[in-house]
Image 1 (cartoon, rainbow, N blue to C red):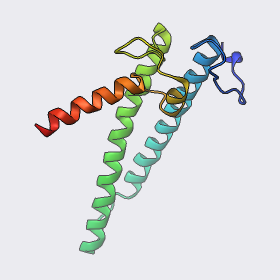
Image 2 (image 1 turned 90 degrees about the vertical axis):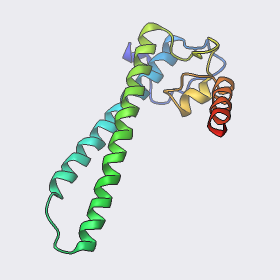
Image 3 (image 1 turned 30 degrees about the vertical axis):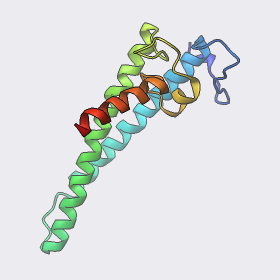
Length: 138
């Protein structure tokens, strides 16, 4: 199935939504994104291990600890993102990818291209964010 896609292909609204070519396009996009994140994570781990020495200067130590903390937070965000990517890949397998979890309507190609892990249409996402704001403000 991986032969369906070429590097110049861009999904279009003029073709059937989530046809095999579009599905493969998003599957490859998600897999590439996941590989890039894993590669970055490995580089972060190597960097943290290489930097595991004690600095005599208090300011240098504080700066190093701040950098370490930032890198660890970034890694945690990446771990959560990988989970979302894996969830999107499962939706591709079960045929639900590209459709809003709330309405069942197509999410839209532009939104999926910009955010391939999206599970809600723009309208459903806006409703969700409004509800969040209401609860947060109370």
